[in-house]
Image (cartoon, rainbow, N blue to C red; front, side, top):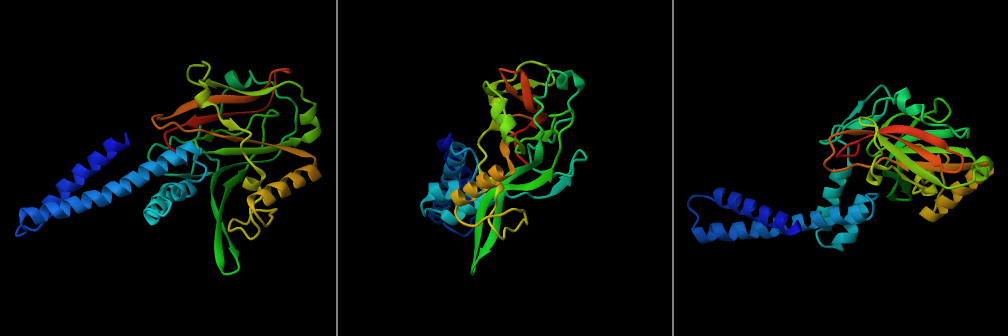
Length: 300
């Protein structure tokens, strides 16, 4: 695939370079300029392809970090610029009355509709009170440290949400992250394993595991942003990612809470498929949370 991209880029640039050459230039001058352009673009395209592969390998959590890991100094500025462009949002709309800000990006399919009773009636809530819940997305933020402006990643664009019917959360879209807390003692008392279950809302059939939202992969550092963060979220802590994760764990312990987080996946060729999912306890047959989300080709 990479070679095909490089060859296509080379052919395209060669054609463009020759066509754009001055009429009075000799054929060899035209060819030399075209070859130089091919080499430059091929190197840049190769970098972008490698960044994409590295980003996919790491779960898409840090595009800029993937760029730095791939380039190792080669075309670092180009790779970082491409990564920042891919990570940025080019405009926002409030969608579905949620107030959530979503990008007008090709392939973004929007937010799933509110699930009907056909689906919510199949969910038995576990009765764990949900608090401090919000929907956001993974992104970057900044803070000032002396003369240096530092950048970190975490959950940004947070919108507080609440459960209905005990555990039914608002509908979401690809790239959304749902965070919530439940009482730690009640959570610990729930015996048996927890697992994700999803059905496609159009057909009612069981969804493939690739459609399952990811769970248990949100760390304290993603919630406890660095002190002085540009978003104004509190509480905060200073230090490394590990320091801030420990600080959040201590804060949870102090408040007697257990945290849960779910990431809504995307699929590159999906134009918009709605799923209804629940995080389900096999022993009790009850769920701590349930929600609908729409999978698209692009995250918001």
